[in-house]
Amino acid sequence: MNLSTFSAILTFAIDTEDRSLAFLEKLLARKDCLAVRPALEEIVQVKKKHRRTLETIRRENITEMILEPVRNLKAEDFPSKIPKKEVKNLADGIRTVLAAEKTASRFLLTASEKLKLAEVAKALKKIQTAKEELIGKIKKLHA
Amino acid sequence: MALPVVKNYVNGAWETSKSKQMGDVWCPATGEKIARVPYSTAADVDRAVAAAKEAFWEWRCTPPVSRARYLFRLKTAFEEHFEDIARTLVLEQGKTIDESRAEVRRMIENVEHATGVTTMMTGYNLEDVAKDIDSCAERQPMGVFACIAPFNFPAMVPWWFLPYAIVAGNTYVVKPSEVVPMTQTRIFEAIDDAGLPEGVVNMVHGSRDVVNALLRHPDIKGISFVGQSATARYIYKTAAEEGKRVQALGGAKNSVVIMPDAKLDKAMPSIITSFFGCAGERCLSGSVLIAVGDVYETLKKKFVAACKAIRVGNGLEEGVDMGPVVSLAHKEKILAYIDKGVAEGAKLLLDGRKVKVPGCEKGFFIGPTVFDRVTPEMTIAREEIFGPVVSLIRAKDLDEAIAITNRSPYGNAACLYTASGKAARDFKYRVNPSMIGINIGIAAPMAYFPFGGTQGSLFGDIKGHGREVFQFFTDTKVVITRWF
Image 1 (tube, chains in turn yellow, cyan):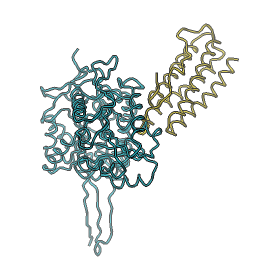
Image 2 (image 1 turned 135 degrees about the vertical axis):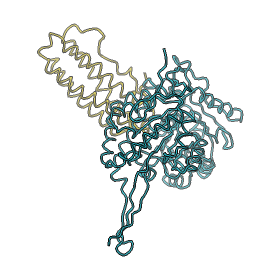
Image 3 (image 1 turned 90 degrees about the horizontal axis):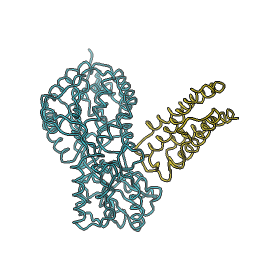
Image 4 (image 1 turned 60 degrees about the vertical axis):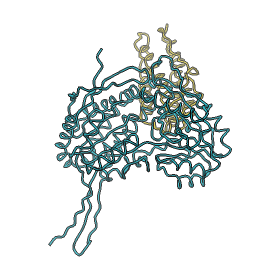
């Protein structure tokens, strides 16, 4: 699907957050996650904040000036890494979260370059930078 | 299953109109009926105006800063219901979810701007206009005002006026378009939650009878209208005859002029949005595309290619670039214009008449339509089509492009794409329309600037929103004082 509008781009970013948040919640419900629970909960809180920011950007930064179509940004280039079935073990789960965050980070970086409004681009880049920090933390868990 | 019937909102409560006459509300994307709207009666209008009149004095005596606080509450309520309002708007109007969100945002921006009442409503004074005599001019609210709204921006347009009217101390009656009554109803549900004093804002649904009852009502001090020019002229004439203040914003036939030095690749998304945003159903849409000099061939090629990339579909799907037009009747009117263009000898470069949208076969869709070899005399170059139809005209130079622009009896908006500051200045200096875009395709003034055109696009003196709108909603009382 072509992500050719401002809302389509922001909605894709929000949906991506929602999917990985739902996955993380499932992971937190597992009995074998006790040792990493505080770290995962922290990641959830950060991601919820990202989601709220994305939703605010979609609601508040839309103006007629930026209703111009965006070209060459496709959802297929950022496929979801979240499996439909439950993962076998915690390590697989953390690996999945890591992959999902990497894709989300790559998407936000690309989107920030496509959207012309400086304020929006800056906000997306900020979330992307925060995601890179999250990725570092998840890597430590994975190790 | 019975369709829901929208209700009037009078004196802080929902009311069912006693009218036996009803209209249908359609989803333009699916072509299905989704609700019914009462064609309310003069008695319904009387009740709403009486409630507004009753509420006036207490509201007028409420300090402006307290009235502004109610607007902050409204803003919070609208932010909370933002997505619901935007989706309701898409459902009944057809525009894309992006366009709807942008419209709701503009509506909220007017609420935000109106909170500046304590600065914008102030008067002025001068000591010693004569020996020991001082004089001051105060702005006072006047009573009940009303808005008659169009179908193309059902959320935003009433809010070009309402927040300023009420924050200035007046009370208000809104008549939404009978084609799209659900959006404003959803907005009034949010207002109901926000706890505005009863009677300060009221809403009456309906058609011609409601309009005439508002225009003739002796207790209404002023009318704000947005719609077609013929209706705007009627509203202006009738309401003025009744001694009311009137601001009646009419139709448009906007030129978009492309100079040979325009940065076409950068500008193309904006040019496309100008013509096809909101399916061309806005008074700021480009309608006539004027290619100056040798840009003609390149422009034609790039413009048509960009038009072909437009994704037409149900506005509720993210990523759709253009939704359907608002109604079957309006679709037929646009199709008749396309037929006329063909009959008068224009060449169809892109024909949107046969566009198909899978899953929405009964929807009121028209694809991007581009005519070439249009002359300024042709009907499609002169009359307001209010749809996704473009007339491409060639001009030898900027002078001719300005002359073509100024031939229109309308005077709403005009846009120029150029890299030349000199050309830009010449253009904005000489064209008649009063909303000008330079390398901008939709010259939409923000809430803090006045919105409205000139000539056949505006009947009245004071435009929508901006600072000036406070003049419309207040009487300037001059007090001359001497103390012995």
